[in-house]
Length: 144
Image (tube, rainbow, N blue to C red):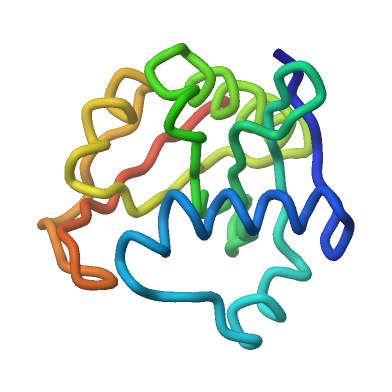
């Protein structure tokens, strides 16, 4: 299992898009728009490979005040519940933390909140509906 950074508009980025589509978007009947993809040029993209195959991906969008919003976390179904998602999150947090990020935010699908709580994230505000399904805003602060 290897943590990797993914550059925008590379073949590995396309693999990440394909994985995100299969895991997150296709079940909801939605696709990426050109605007969605254009907005990702300033995001940081990360992944996990197993035997050279991308099995998990995550994007981080810069926010004001030394914060990022994690987005589009996806783990291939056959690799879920094996610690790969936690490995991805911890490595992304560490890498971003080394560059000065002190606050991590995300919108978790309702069924994933327990996963993020185990990683130290806390609920912020009331649950809400995003892309037609219940979500919870969560955040984690680190360092000084």
